[in-house]
Length: 242
Image (cartoon, rainbow, N blue to C red; front, side, top):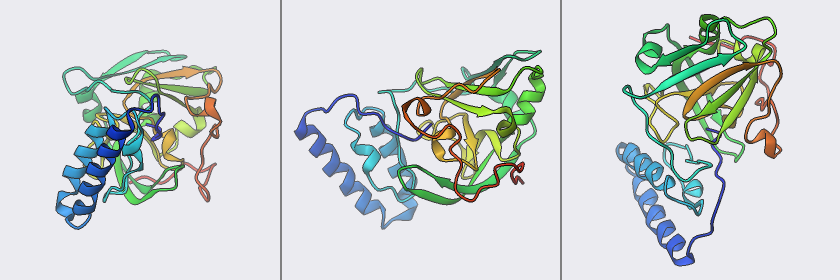
């Protein structure tokens, strides 16, 4: 999700130092062994789920990504219990299961992932269902102007205008880097908004509501830009998808 971290408690200094020393040592070793990168990502992602200090969000990762959550832990979802609900100003409220989303027409977008913290992962492929196709399946009413996204972490939210949501490079993503999206990366389903900073690509997506106005999301309420466009992006085009 908005790949940002909110520190809710400081934790014992010794515990923080011990965690930092252990994880930095692991990162240093794995940086010289690319084939172990996925293992390090799993360790770092799991540690971030129980880390109230924010240390894990600062550690190097050979894959370039950082791991953040605004809550202490997030439930895990899979094919047996995942659902995506679309409601609000629509003619046909719908609930999609993970198999149903996988059975829909898929699109692939390759774009740089850029975080407001300054890190970037170039040429990252995402694959999933165009958000426009999901909106069409539900039937947006004429008064619908924007979308509000909610997540099964129970805390995060995001927004898009209807025009932004219908771009071809905005999707409900099921794969990242040609693999199913892991829990640590916001899986099994996350929002992906290619032309915007990564905080707009909400992790652990569970709900889409069509609204008559833009409702600021979690980070927008805390001063972030309501749109989050990357520099140089075509803000009025429909994006580029494969």
